[in-house]
Length: 253
Image (cartoon, rainbow, N blue to C red; front, side, top):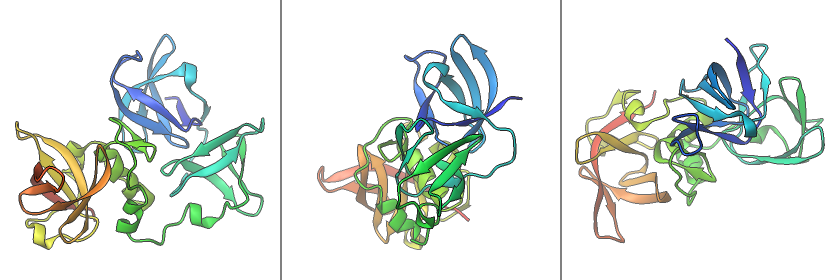
């Protein structure tokens, strides 16, 4: 099976081989995927990070064959870098780099070498902050359905990004994430980093957020924002009522 490493900041992963098809998710720079099928200039793939399947447009894709077992390092903040032709690219948190050399200010993706800004150091790929502090970095990031990067992210993409930066891969969608970790029965027993899940009028999981501290949740709803939470759900001060009904709490271990 053919495997590749993405060299575009992100590539939309769609439900079908057409731009009018729903964007289900995104493949980020440095992430690996396997080819499943091809139709015209579209390729059906499965991502290695979260085993998501969908279609990507080969016309705007840049990638390199994955010929080994190289390990990517996850960026926790944006990074300015330059390709071999001296064109610039700005990677976002969640993207991955390979073989980082902090003295030469370079990293590699397959056979391709990238040159970085002078500030490139270990702080870009190591994390010493708490999971709450990491989540707070992305406050006000705009909501985009299917998004996984700070410039446009959805609710489960946000929680997945924060845990990816902390070296803990979790599934892509909220309905999958609710099956991970262990159950926490009461909202008063939560701690920062616990995931809280909410259902719709049909009883289906439709939203996820992260406990920031006692009584506060950070989540992507219109934008990444902080709201109050109790045993009923999320209470939005500006509307004076509950916007999401609490269904489950999970602790990622």
